[in-house]
Image (cartoon, rainbow, N blue to C red; front, top):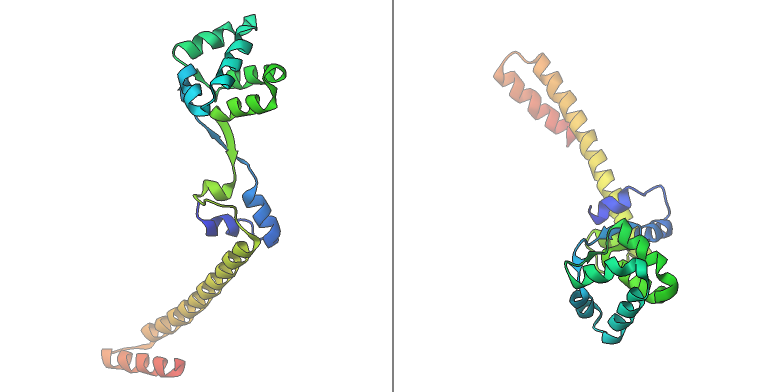
Length: 179
C-alpha cells in the first residue's frame, strides 16, 4: 500500500491521530524458518545464552521434544505450539529471553514500515500527504467539471449540426466562448 493510500484511508482523523495509528505495531509478521541450536547460536551470538536455554529446557521433562528438535530438524518459532511453550517457560527464561525467542517467529511492525518506510512517519509528513491528497482531489474535481461542460457542448453541437462546415464553425464558436 502506498503512503498516500495509508493516509487517505484515515482522513477522518487528525494528522496526529493518523501518525499514531500508522506508527502502531499492528501488522503481524511471521518467519517459519526452522531454527536449530546452531541457528540460535548464530542469531543471538551469545554462547552463554544458548547454554542457559539448553540447561533450562533440559531441566523440564515435558520439554525434551524441544531439545531434540533443536538438535535435529529445528523448531518453527512461528507456530502457536512453540509460542505457547515459550510463554510457559517465561518464569524460567525471563521476559527478555522469552520475548527474544518468540520474536524469531512472530513480531509486529507498523503499517507505515510495512509499506516499505524505514522510519516512523511524522505529523508533518502526514500533513504534507493530506495537503497533496486535497490538491489532487481539487484537480480531479476541476477535470470532472471541465469534462462535463465539454461533453455537454459537444453533444449539443452534434445534435444541431447538419454539415461538416457547420460543425467546425460551432466548435470554433464554443472554444471562443470558453476563452
